[in-house]
Length: 144
Image: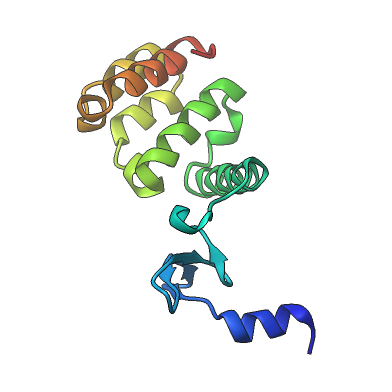
């Protein structure tokens, strides 16, 4: 036995569908992973470094999912790749894949029309500022 095994045994963890989820400890405080207190009522939370670590992992995961689902995605410039990462980050990979016309336009290099098409979505109605920025990024290939 080592400290990791011991803490895993004593603290426990809660997984659903193969993923760690927030749970309430025996005192009712929000906890994540192996006994990680995240409840702010008890001083819990994540450090800036931990949030950055999670973000980097999430961006890497989304980029891999895009590469797996859109064989042409790696041929895009970095700025347009990032626009699709941003969309998939918010919508999930399946949500992004529902943008069939937008993705087809991007695949064929019609970036101006792809940006316009993306703005014809419920996504753009729900988060108009973000959608407008990402659509401009798709159209211009420049950071917005």
